[in-house]
Length: 268
Image (cartoon, rainbow, N blue to C red; front, side, top):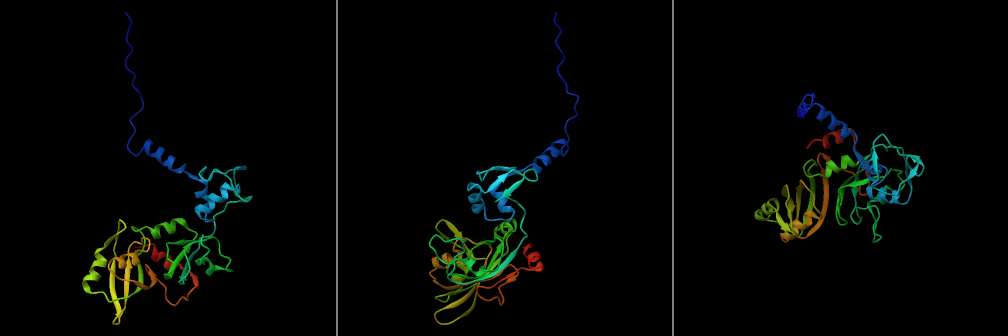
């Protein structure tokens, strides 16, 4: 009669929580791959879209081979990436505050040929910088620029970004009920628009200046919010981002943020 073999029993001990499984997960995290265009962007070389164009134009090689796929996976520290034949090195991080004038659009290149905010940096010899958030063409005031994508993402995320303060001139004087509605919020084009706080700074018979504070910024947020409530915006100026004030910075002028301002922006 054939004897049955005893069931196989592993001599290995059960893995403890946080033991081998954790070490494998940690190893996996260390091997995270990113698309080639993203790697160029995170190095502060150019924007993600511009990086994708450079890759598709054949200007980027990986380990001696020209790669034209912007999503080609790159493992940090394992690949030699060259741009135009030069090693890819992270640019020094730069954080700029600009007093944006009215009439300029917040984009690198405008399809309609309009003047952009980048003309304020003409001749300055600055590295590639991206706007941190937006101000529309008719708006003015404080606008940040940086070549640090992670810092920019934190500042523009409603859950981690700072409050933003605006001075807004409207074509009528709001009453208490209307001010309350601005903070309660309204619906417009399927979006909920509300102000963190609103107060009247001064007013005449027909117009008023408001201080409006936002804790998030949707496209044309303040203009749309006020339009729903029957107000037209005559002038809109951003005067502060978190603790950083526009101050006496002249129109079209810019300056670097100092270490104290960067530290203060890191805390909401």
